[in-house]
Length: 175
Length: 211
Image (tube, rainbow over all chains, first blue to last red; front, side, top):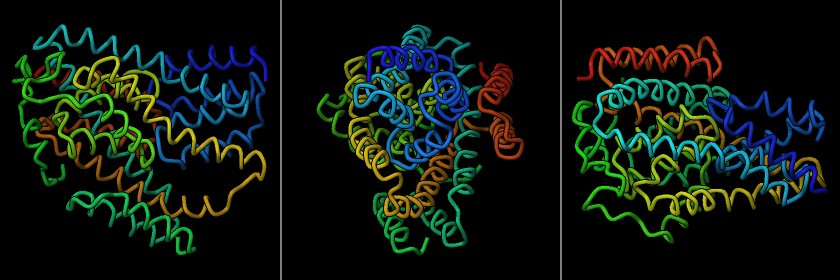
């Protein structure tokens, strides 16, 4: 591919990086608009396939962006798009933490921390519920989800064993 | 909220009440005394492992690594980092790594960890991307993923329950957690909307309680 598309990838995803409040999930609509409608790097079907591929994989969900970059401009495209999506927002977070640390013990800081935390809890719990429903293809899937949650909460067993179990069940057609 | 078994690391740091956060030795910019931060090599390979295995969201596995297995962070330090990460724009895994980097070898640690966590999945996904470009679909991968998805969901659920078990989540502030949950699950409000409404509500409620 050419340098122009690399620059486009860098610019578009840097902008998305600092504007995507709520992380990758909420950025998706805007990413689709930029990628499919504005630049017409791919059609909606390909976008959906890449999205599915990126989300199914282990690792940070920014992988969706890596795949888009790869589709547009090969491996350099993947690297540029990933860095553009993750870099600016991470630097911003780092700056905020630097400021944050200067107000160690300030009352307003403790108020903000105590006030934002329950939102994080609500998001974590709702994320778990939504993913459970989305992943469930029947009673066996719900059972597997419940078993996983209990095992992780109650034992020291590495979840990798459960991942392996899930993969085997999936490959054997049980799930 | 559900009572979950406390692990050692959580018991160590998690029980500090909200108003005792002012102790400078707890979360100094250089990390806490008595807790040696991991080496860069350790950071690299542990984050690479998290990246390679992070089904169900890398943050779930990062908590496991940093708080439960290695004890690099207390549950409270992790939760504070997570709050900043979620409320800032951008992919929250990298925000989280940035937000806790002051405990884990600073900017260098942040860059090393961020690269490490992406390396393996990027290679994975690029191989799959190439296969996709050539064959369109890979059924075996799809089947395996279908089986892994419920496990990933279980991991995410347990993460939510562990986070909810934090002692700082007391009445009436826990109400904000419930409202957030209802807003997302039942009303399907978008995340930016939820953050922009529930965040200020939580802060308002906390401002009446925190001294």
